[in-house]
Every structure is written in C-alpha cells, then in structure tokens.
Length: 54
Image (tube, rainbow, N blue to C red):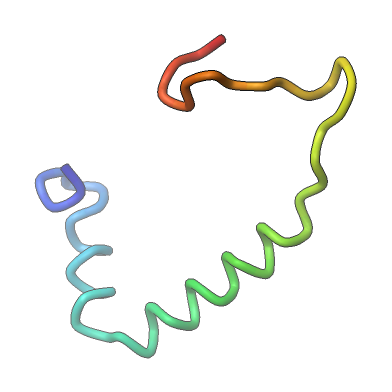
C-alpha cells in the first residue's frame, strides 16, 4: 500500500535509500511520541481491537 500510493511511494523509496535520514526521522518521531500523555478516566478509551473504532 505504501509503495502503490502516489502520496507515500516517494517517501518510502527515499527512506529505503537513505538509512541515515530515516534514522533521524525515526528518532524525532520517538521523541515526539514520548511526550504524549496517557488519557485516563472519561478522556481515555480502552480498545479491544485497535483496527476498529469503538
């Protein structure tokens, strides 16, 4: 799917060719994800199946 989509195919190919660039992007994404707080109480949601909207 990622390689067949016009909007993502170029990004995927560039990341495959340049491992260093991909590693920098991955590191930035991990730092960003680390700042996300868990939602609790009525704000949060427990998903029984991550692919399905509750």
